[in-house]
Structure formats: C-alpha cells, structure tokens
Image (tube, rainbow, N blue to C red; front, top):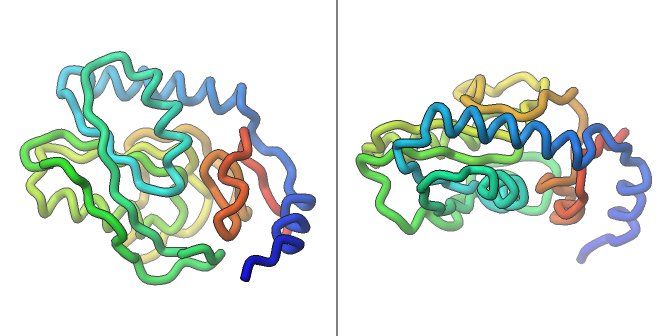
Length: 183
C-alpha cells in the first residue's frame, strides 16, 4: 500500500538545487562532448530505466548525428530508498556486438548499477562502452562500483535527490529540476 502522506511530506521538505535552465545548459555541453567523441561511430544509446528516461529523452534531441536507441531495465531499489541486489527486468533488444554503446543513467552514486551494465556490455563484445550521467553524486563508491562516468552533467552533494528521473518510491521523477530532500 502506498503512503501518499509520506510522499507529500517528503515533497514539502525538498528544495531546488538545479533548475531546468541549468540542466538544459549542462545537457547542451554534454551533447557537444558526446558528438565530438562519438559522432561518427553511429552509437547505440542505451537508456537505463526507469531513472534515465527523462534525461535521455532530452539529451537525444541534442545529438544531431546518426544513432540508435535501446534500453535495459535494471533496478536495485524496487520502489524503496535503499539499494539491494541488482534485478534484471529487461535486457537490450538490439545486437550490441561490435558496436559503440553509451550507457545513459540518471545518477552515479554507489556505481554498482553502471558497473554491472557496463560488464554486461563488455561480455557482449561491444567495440567501446561509454557512460553518460546527468548527476555525479559526491558519495563513496561501493567496492566494484564505477568510479567515474565518461560524460557528466552535474556534480551534486551527498543528499537524497528527487526530480528529473530520480524518485522517491516511484514518485517525483517528473519534477523539472533536481531537488534535495533534507531527511
């Protein structure tokens, strides 16, 4: 059962860290970096669902070169606020072998999800695999977690975050900014 009062209370404690205009500016910058590095490789942009959906949708409109999109659906949270083991819900539909792949994720915090998906791609003999994150959270990486993304939009303090794909129990992904929640 969903506790809507809990969601409302959390939302009231949130304060804006980065608004839409700032996010647009960092996505413009990231798009230039990605195009410069990968534009002639015709990459597959692999969205890590659910969190990266909003970020990837906005980023894709800035990448004016031939590419393909696909997704992988993995979760460590399953509607909770503490991560657990990685659940593979859906693997990519397309053939990755020999291709350049860009993993698009909303946030790099523990690094475990990105590391696992990157390993998955490597085992499928991709030509190259890169990572693009909207947010790099100043948070200790777990052992085995990815330390740094290839393309990063924002560096954010170690707070609980919602908005722009980041959620609280499945809510608040739709907020048009990055919000910190004081807990």
